Length: 385
Image 1 (tube, rainbow, N blue to C red):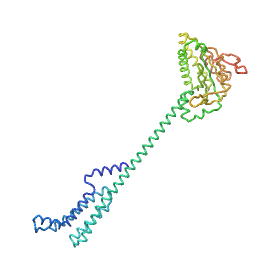
Image 2 (cartoon, helix red, strand yellow):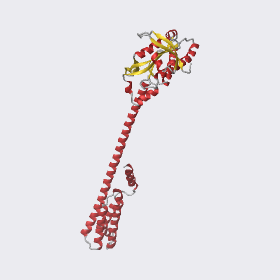
Image 3 (cartoon, one colour):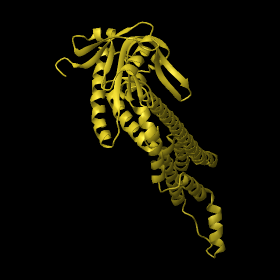
Image 4 (tube, rainbow, N blue to C red):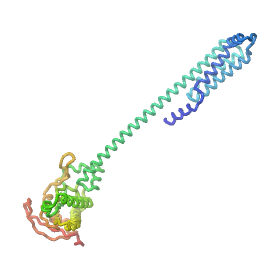
């Protein structure tokens, strides 16, 4: 539609002759030659040339030749408006004029021929004005459609931007407690419902820094914050690397669990791999801290079992947390662990006993746990120390 309208427009502007002028000129000049004889001869007599006669053959020739000029104008203008009836009417009028001039002259018939020729010129002009009106309406529709398309594009763009902003915000919130890859999967698959309250089998890991309370009391706040920043930054990277879910950070403490919100193969083994990497990384950090006179240690507790999980908090300040006996057991094992120890529950050990090396700790009486708990100290994976 756009290309057609533009073609029509360019075709019209390419014309150097004002529309309809040729048809009007031919018709008007022919009428003037026909009916202006008296006026012309009278003017000549007034100028002092009496007795002059106007050649009737020349007059007739001029009349029908000018009529043909009008027909030529009608034919030319037909290319723009596409109507045939003005041209047909003009041909009929000129044919009548020629017929009455060269067969049986009758002024009434001649007049009817000129009437048809004038009507043809008027209809020609009307047809072009109608066509121009249609072109204007077509251009108006094109502009309106383009405006609607642009508005729709703007609306879609605005919606897409809003959706992307929402997605980025959701991803940022999920990354607070989920590994980046897990957060992207939850968001991409529209599975945020899996973060609602539910029960699931999880392996929970607690860790914290030994001697941190005394350290924080003895050191300047800036030094304490620097240690915490380095500690949480490195441990957080390890949690993301192994696909764990961070429940919360509290001072020097960190809680992580596996197998939720997305399930994983051998969550017990993944938790132990993370614990071993955490201990190794802490030892590396501690070398620098010891040079600065800091005396810190590191302990970890791991337990497995069913827990209730879900989002807890308000507005944008919430955590994805787990609650249950297995979670409490992991926390108590962490509290009991000495510097460098990774204490694991018997249930957790039995799930991967052929893949790790441990030393038996025996039964432990833990605060808040009614029955003694049999625990192991994780030394490493099979084939490692």
